[in-house]
Image (cartoon, rainbow, N blue to C red; front, side):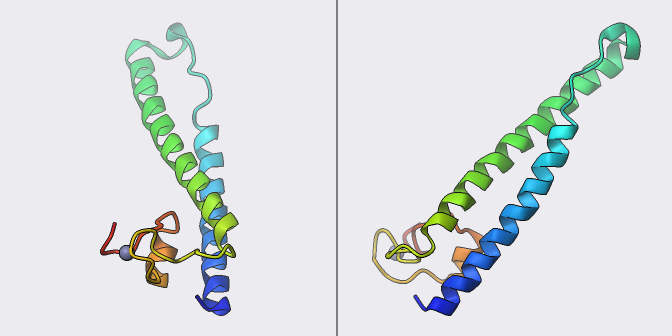
Length: 109
Ligand SMILES: [Zn+2]
């Protein structure tokens, strides 16, 4: 893969990492401990618990994605980056940018 393509991919991954980190920060702020029942009422406490688990699930997803992106970023300049793990053909750069964690081309994935 060409150096300029790799640079473009690297930049793209870095941008995605930066915005994920911001999202994670915001989500973490909204998973603050839930107030005890007597201060907000039983139903709104249940709501709060439900919201909290939704937020926590998306927090986990984003953290997983962040890990993958950081891993791809560390591999961008390795030989073999952008090469399909099964058929050894070059993976479409657009695919690498959209799904930097993929190590297979569209056909093999
Ligand atoms: Zn392939």
